[in-house]
Image 1 (cartoon, helix red, strand yellow):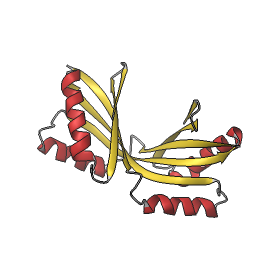
Image 2 (cartoon, each protein chain N blue to C red):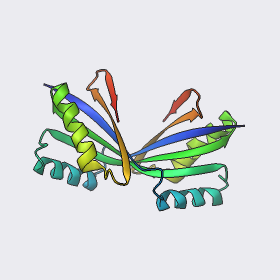
Image 3 (cartoon, rainbow over the protein chains, first blue to last red):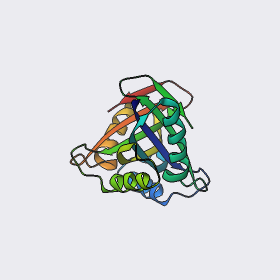
Image 4 (cartoon, chains in turn brown, red):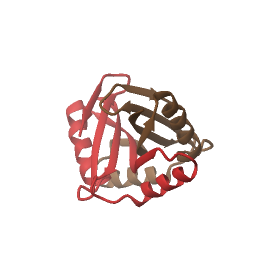
Length: 91
Length: 91
């Protein structure tokens, strides 16, 4: 039984309009950052899970796909690292 | 003049309460994920910048600290990678 730190990244699918990102982009352009484009605002979620690695991986996949993101509009990927341990990357 | 992809991660400082994270944690616990703790919800922002590497780095630092995050309550870090190029990590 170990403790794992997970990071989940949720982004809108490229085909979905992102009004929040557009607003940030326009604000930046007014602040003399006219060379900035393609701003997309997503979510970044950190969580701690305890259990065996296999259990935690399956659980994190389920949580990412079914709780933290809406698969119709969003893409999600996750990273899992054992506390002070090696890293694992998934999508 | 190159094009760079930037990723910015904004998280609440550890001492700041995160009601959104608490809500997710409680929801997960009701969904039989009682081994999940320490849920924190932050922002993940992707942007594209054009210019020389030195300019873009300075600009991204400024944008991250002054536009995309509130340094009183939030921590922010960024990653910069040239389109199909090597990666640079900052905080």
